[in-house]
Image 1 (cartoon, rainbow over the protein chains, first blue to last red):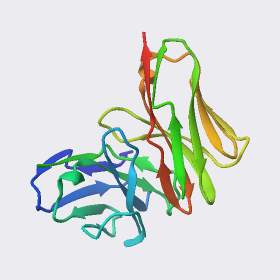
Image 2 (cartoon, helix red, strand yellow; image 1 turned 180 degrees about the horizontal axis):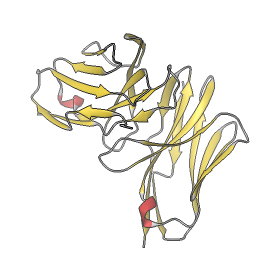
Image 3 (cartoon, chains in turn green, cyan; image 1 turned 30 degrees about the horizontal axis):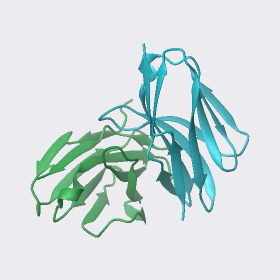
Amino acid sequence: DAGVTQSPTHLIKTRGQQVTLRCSPKSGHDTVSWYQQALGQGPQFIFQYYEEEERQRGNFPDRFSGHQFPNYSSELNVNALLLGDSALYLCASSIRQTNEQFFGPGTRLTVL
Amino acid sequence: EDQVTQSPEALRLQEGESSSLNCSYTVSGLRGLFWYRQDPGKGPEFLFTLYSAGEEKEKERLKATLTKKESFLHITAPKPEDSATYLCAVDSNYQLIWGAGTKLIIKP
């Protein structure tokens, strides 16, 4: 049984560029949440998708947007990248918005 | 404001030396408290969910307990492979609020 997968593993971008990160949830899961984790900090909630709609959002600007597809996979898009967007981006999946979440390995984004 | 605080920030133990990690929380409506383990450069790995004061869960050398204001993660006779960062999160109104974690180092 495949767990949560994310791609790419690592990504290097320059300020002002745009980036798309991808996530496939654990088999049987229908909800995807995205988190940003800075070094030495706990994850910060970005948003959650369920039934192809954004259901909840944390305190992140509109530069952060997402999408969920009919097969429950999800994308996180970040526009106009800033140096401060450098972080580990984590995707977590769960069943019907419950918060017993299972995480993927993350995408390490570096903005130069 | 909802808040989760973990202590200590870092803990160094000798192999076999038992100890406890603390997670204190202030939330408006607790719907669950979660413990995760995170290895460097990897995503958090789910350990336990606790829902009500007095509840306890165990897994191998780990035992999690919950009171109305805090949770403890007890580690008994730890081994070097238990070295990781342990994260606590609370479900407050369907959002997870996370602590900064405790970095646990077990020396052989």
